[in-house]
Image (cartoon, rainbow, N blue to C red):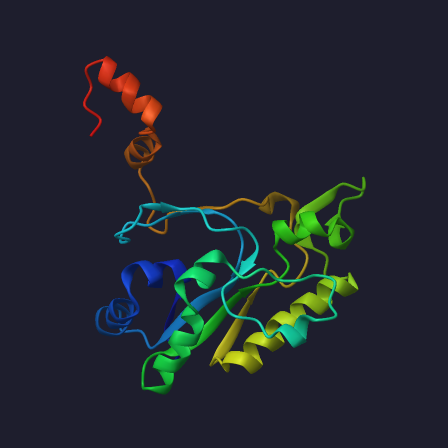
Length: 216
């Protein structure tokens, strides 16, 4: 049985691959990592990260190194996330660990939910009955959008040979879905939300200091 957990590349980079693997296998009893390989924007609570406690990833980027020839003639092109360009190919590292006896690898792949690409290619997004564009949803009927998803899945499949691929948003999305995501992963109480909403920018700290409040 495959027992997996959804995981983000920036988490593995922040916490460390060996620590993540040990925790997933020894503490959680899992045998697979489901890594985000294509993802959308959002705000993510990072309670375990030694670098930050909230993270805003780039919108609509991929988290692996694509094969240039596979994308050469396509209208819609992927963008590799800066954290991969700067911090290394996490998916490649996981695959190599798997070959050495580590956990299996699943590629959690967001397909057509991509506001960045929708803004760049408004001709390829879904539209309501009034002609308004849903920039967060590339249309599965548009040939360029279909070609993009085919190339995305093929590139991951042939380039990395994961144990499985999980496809998210491969079709039409509802209007209520919207396009922005706030994820905390644990469930915040009202008190948590209040405390996390307090501002500690230099201007607020300056005003607090003038009022006799130590914001350090």
